[in-house]
Length: 384
Ligand code: FAD
Ligand code: SF4
Ligand code: SF4
Ligand code: SF4
Image (tube, rainbow, N blue to C red; front, side, top):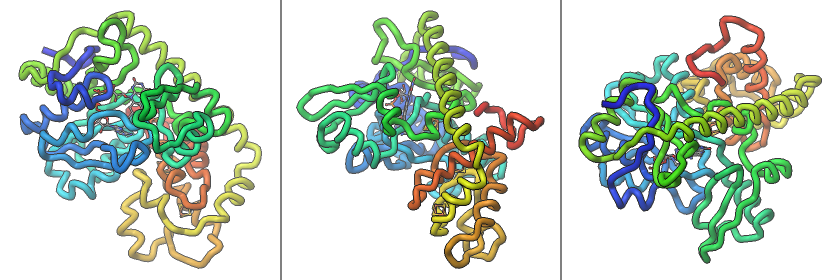
């Protein structure tokens, strides 16, 4: 019997899934089992759209369709948390499995605090996350830094600090993230600052860090984070849907070291980004937000800011429609509303047509508030 706190190597026993999965297919195997055993009625995950720069949300109810969601899309910046209510309108009553990166998980926790999600009905399968790359800049990066057409890329991965691509002719090329990021490419800026690399408030946290020896690339490292997660893994093993073995102690050590160095790197980026902002925060905020077109995408996508759709229909202080150029109070109100619980998911910035560094502002304010005030504003169990 698997228990909360255990660290395992896990892989699916389904050979079809193994071929499509990223690292042994434990995640897909568990999701498929959760559907088959009726532990959940639906699964919300991500699948490839027209190409690997097009990660689209997928709601799966037929276990046979889980294989469409297998594999990691590092150019997939979609946040699943806020979508859960639109994809599963009756989700407060339905049991749903959802694949969560750190930001998806934090988004769900914030939605639960606001009564939008019933976490008792959610099975969170966490995936570790070193960061994701925005799709349009990724295409430009591949053309410029790798010298190939982005359309010729059939697989991408992030491994040992490199962004590696494989082209249709079978060639591989890797460039270090440091080099990419020093030249303005690589992971999204919010991802560089993110410290929720292992989503431990999910039911299980799965990733490739720490998988060594003969299981390297063939299994996923699973940290069992809750009794619900332990129950799922125990039953999936008993049903022979996944296989597990204890994680190699050396692998556990390596994983902890990688996590520690990712945190240090995130601190470095925070220092760099926030110190650039600190001397002239109001000036920069005023200048950057002055080009806002009040399209409301930042509000619509934010997992902390809701229920945007309802509010937009009625007059409201926070999102009052008005003439352009935008009144600075629009952004001050928005920041006042979200900054105590901004999760730095980057959705606002990602969707802003005017390329305003919105997540930078709200994350800087949230981080500063958290460092001064106790109890922490927007406090939750996670650390960000
Ligand atoms: P699979 O069975 O292949 O299932 C993968 C699941 O991930 C699928 O359900 C799929 O829908 C979902 N998924 C794919 N792309 C996304 C996305 N963009 N957003 C949300 N869900 C998605 N592990 C580490 O240890 N270190 C890392 O630095 C790391 N970075 C990652 C970055 C990203 C953007 C992603 C998506 C994953 C990352 N992982 C990382 C996790 C790792 O790549 C594998 O997902 C994990 O080991 C599980 O492997 P698997 O074969 O069991 O997964
Ligand atoms: Fe991953 Fe964090 Fe970026 Fe989310 S914000 S994609 S968890 S690095
Ligand atoms: Fe995410 Fe932006 Fe909302 Fe913060 S303000 S939670 S970064 S969408
Ligand atoms: Fe303004 Fe950008 Fe928000 Fe649209 S997404 S309302 S342009 S800040």
